[in-house]
Amino acid sequence: MLIFRLLSILCISLIVFLGHFHLNENKFSDENINEKTLKEIDTIRPFVYLDSTSFNSQKDFEANWNMLYPWGKDHNGTARMFPSKVSLKAGGILEISADWNKGKDEGESSSDPHLPIAFHSGAIHLKQQIKVTKQNSYWEISGDFQAPTDYGTWPAFWITGAKSWPPEIDMLEFKGNDTCWQNTVSGKDWRHTIWTTEKTVINDAASVWHHYKVTIEYIDEEFSKVKMYIDGVLKSEEIKDYTNKPFWLIINLQMEGASGQTQASSIVKKKSTLFRAKNVYVAAITRH
Image: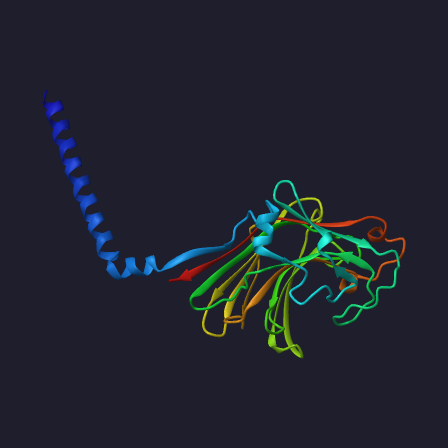
């Protein structure tokens, strides 16, 4: 009986102690989460500009994306872009195909370095521009890709200045082999550029889905912090003068140029080259 009474007293004491601790813990929390803190939390919210479903249907695609580059059909390789080379596949997959024009004379690219057009391919760009500001202070841009790595192929998932060049960020760029280039370009104008590059070998980039991501974080009215990832692994971290500069987001399959001049016997001239994307996502932390 004595043992039972002692155990009862011990249990009651323990309950009282735990109750007192819980009340103090709540008091501590209430003192720190004051009205000002709650107001600040309420004014900082994530805003999704593009969820992962924009390739699920033609309607979703057309609501979010435009065909071609923002400036037209041509860029810095030998491929000219056509809407017919972009298609949607089952499972929310975007597919861009590039095909040799069999040597037909189609003139030169209208963009520097004005290479002769040898391929028909595709490009798309997001209708919504991306701009890091004090209000939109943290951005994430990401997607899953199967990127071709054959000699002469030049796929890219990137953002570039909407009003000037630089700036530029390449989250994914392959230049005719299995090395992914992740670049940041800054500088006062195109004559004075600063390039930083991180290279990652991905042997199965063309056949296996890999995840490519950039985050851009506001530091001040001039500089932002840029972090790039592949499959969740941080690959680079840079400070760049990207604040308050609008960007276009582009997915394209360019050919040759920086990825090498091909011969008639090259694999890219014997069959279609395919670049696939899914789950492309764009969001920002916004202050209301």
